[in-house]
Length: 232
Image 1 (cartoon, rainbow, N blue to C red):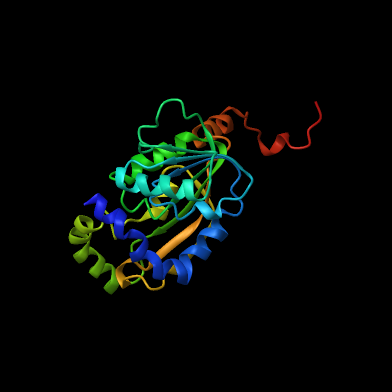
Image 2: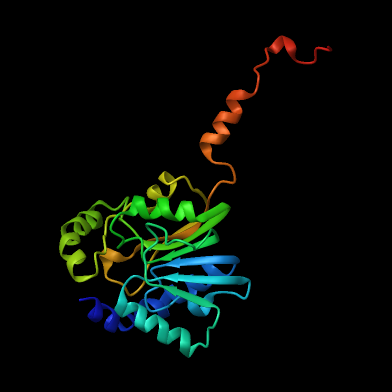
């Protein structure tokens, strides 16, 4: 089925790309810089939007059919400083090092284990590194649409490459240890109603991990109110 998904993906997505997604991708990626890894780039919809500030671009695409089209697109665009790796991000392929940014667009819905993927993303980022995300999500706050998402999800997973309709991706990003710097919620136009709710934005890996920050705070000696302003 992956060959079929790769063959029809661009045509299926064309209406939404022209209506909003292409513009959203451009806006999201305009500040990406440094060493960047994109997970699940598929046929390469993000490639035209990477700025010249990107010094290294690694594309992790485990699906052979998608990878074939991705490679052809890179060749057509004459992109020579791009590495295509036939592996997912978890476990992290040896030798890739750490990155300034990770890009995930319309892929976190279909990874087998969302928590494991985000943990791997967190691990591959340098302290202060950023996750740039654009994902369709559960219709939280819209009970009727969410109910339909739940009904349709088992079938949708089988026909759409393990795509989940009810993932709470924002909560999962926070749960992985990220701090969300920017987030926007919008409806993906010209998409089926049950995949329209979306989020996009930037999440940052803290420069100091939470547990280290707590430990540092615990080692600071406490002072009583009577100590304030007291001369030695």
